[in-house]
Image (cartoon, rainbow, N blue to C red; front, side, top):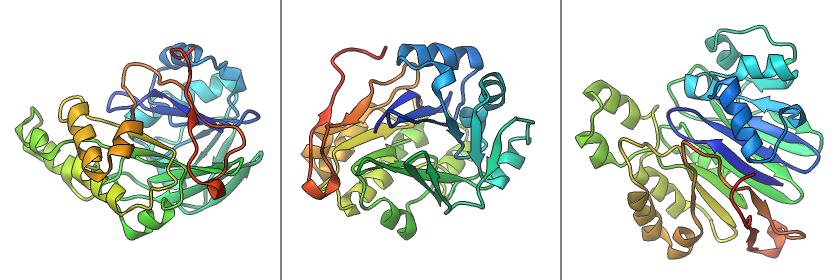
Length: 274
């Protein structure tokens, strides 16, 4: 199993999970033209994507979904609430989850959805299991609940939102109403909230930490790294920041390693995406 970002932030989000035999796209907040450009940069042909999963209906996650799946006949999985809130576009291969909390078996990939507190109709996030490894995603979440803590406690890799620095948000350009929405219990995780979550997490076997959905207006990578460093210098050294304007390198687990054997190094790409 390997994974990468096609872009992460308030102007568009899309994540690829690839098991070698099955490719999953999580969200698509980019136009068809931009998505195809970014797929080309990571060496993926659009026709090889098997499935698209949706976390929630906000435009930075679903703007380009309908045009992409109509063009390339891709299967879509999402919750009924998310699909209705997204306008219920007519797509050829729609599959509805019974709600957050359902587990799917997709060609050898075990995909578990779980609910998150966010100001959307029926939001969820996902955990992927394949080849003895477990990849968890947590973005677009206002607070970490005990259920989330338990659900993500045994991951080998974690994609985690560090959306904003609270002081930067208060001093920043956003109006007070938007500040309250972002910092509220159904908004986005602050650096402190994400750091507290890591501090409570059993992260000894965590091979890879990805910093995602970082606000360009209300945060800075140095502030994020300072937060992670306060939890663990080891985590800070291995943390990777996903950017808004460019795909990330692929991240892949070292061949033959599994959770039961303890931490293992990730195989890092030797060059830029594509």
